[in-house]
Amino acid sequence: MQREFATKFSLLSALFFLLTPELIPVSEAVWLNIPKTGTKCVSEEIQSKVVVLADYLVISDEHSIFPTVSVKVTSPYGNVLHHSDNATHGQFAFTTQESGTYLACFEAVGNSHGNKDISINLDWKTGIAAKDWDSIARKEKIEGVELELRKLEGAVEGIHENLLYLKDREADMRIVSEKTNSRVAWYSIMSLGICIVVSGLQILYLKQYFERKKLI
Image 1 (cartoon, rainbow, N blue to C red):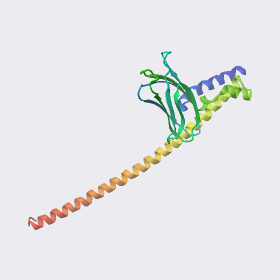
Image 2 (spheres, rainbow, N blue to C red; image 1 turned 30 degrees about the horizontal axis):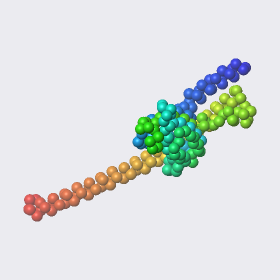
Image 3 (cartoon, one colour; image 1 turned 90 degrees about the horizontal axis):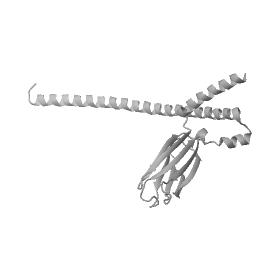
Image 4 (cartoon, rainbow, N blue to C red; image 1 turned 180 degrees about the vertical axis):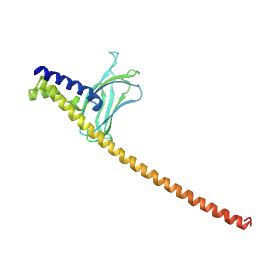
């Protein structure tokens, strides 16, 4: 019985680990090279009510140089969620209030980089990956299979919420498409009507012209 349960659990775990990266972005480690003059940004489209947690670290190949960066994180509506100047490392965390593209921008500060490009390691986590499962396990006194089941439950909830979000996006796009098709249809009818009126006026003008010239 235990072997059968373990087999089913292993298959279920494998299935969710295969589905989760496709349906819900959970964690993404990014290596950025920031030019000595300019800004490098990272963006991700996230739905509302999702926890976002990110750690960033400036990497220097030379021990004598300690480059710093300016960090700014904004919401789809332009609200500043995190801002830090002269940073060598840091963390930002927030819960999204609206769906859309969230932007994290890094800019080299002054001459701290020694006239060289700056490298940054950014660990960006969303949803289930942003949860501190060690703290949850200690608080609720769960471990082993029970903890893995809780993680799978969280993955299922994330997948369900993402599917609902995609469904809403599809409905919005369908409404926009229907409105566009309706406008195109009315524009086509209007264009056809204008062409008919102009053709009628041209025929009337030519008839009157030929009559005055006594050609007909």
